[in-house]
Length: 265
View 1: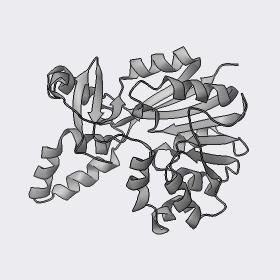
View 2: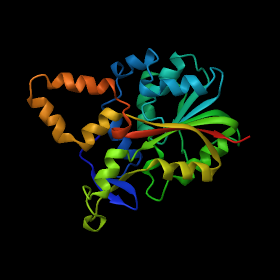
View 3: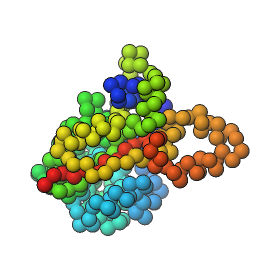
């Protein structure tokens, strides 16, 4: 993930400017990431911080879609864990081709997550990890389509960048640049506060089951880079960083927030 993105505070959101997050952007981002070695931990079933949620809310025989699967590492990991009806779609043709060169039989396909080629109420589970925030006009079409393809009673697991306590303080104190000073920058993504995104999910029709901040270590690096440069200069600074990694989900610095929501019966 990039830490050199320009951020502004606007209408209680953070707007990130970097590059347009279109298919060609992601194809270029993943080009040098996708190697056989990259998948080793996922072949062993590693799901990083989010494994708890998959195991808690999905059954092994559920039909599950990861919408915007990117490198498809979680499709690989879920298959390794025995979720045999998982599949992924992504709009990056080059990315999917590269993944398929390593895993020819992996159930991942080119597709549009705002227009999924399945009938209503098809999937038992839906996964969207860091996708819906990249639409400048808002995430609503993604959420509406997720709701459409999910069965009544099915669960959706969705993550978006999070306006955690640290970011909220910085935003309200003026640490982010003012919108009027931005010129000809490429929109990249939004970060949402918990209430705003909860309201969007509930307006779509979902019931929110739980939510929590994740990726706290990255959130600290992005918001307090000088602190990490200081750690790099002092004896034993690496030990402090290792300790911080072990408490990665600390709420005040979480880079992302994960929502588990359910389609009403």
